[in-house]
Length: 248
Image (cartoon, rainbow, N blue to C red):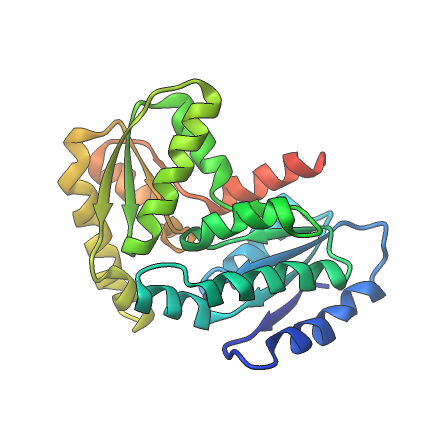
């Protein structure tokens, strides 16, 4: 049974998480428990379906706190308060019996890396497998994002993966300014158009594209058709990578 939990406020959040996630302990402990931590609701439903298709052997729960990404956007960076809340979510999942956290927001990817070192359970980044595949196969990589706060952590991840792989890559940023706000307001047509325009502006400078946010995955095929370049997104690759990480 897959449960969905959403928290969109600050005060008392850890108590509520622990209270709700204690239901995990009622499940069969022979199963691996994954808790997806989100900073918005957009990926809860899509990832639920992706886990069912590509990793059905695990039990999945979701923690979604949209106040996190709002604070990141407002301050144009990950604030200490956002960092503290995320680490509390990671350890709250551990307290409830989860085996691994699946961090779904690239804007807070650096916090996930820190959490993987210091939380009591592993924290797996949704975008790590995408980045690893990109640097392994391509030299000039276009990074498309709908938020400026996602570009820097995604570029750092790509450069780190390139260094680990002994590869040299060139990154070209493509910001679809206004696309995030359009998507949040329900204007999917404008959201998609702005992403397409951002990719087309830099298409002649790159060999392929990565989509910095999982919520952009629906544009993967369309951008490939528009530009004639390969395009990678994180949700399916992330779950497949988690499967490999878990040895399943």
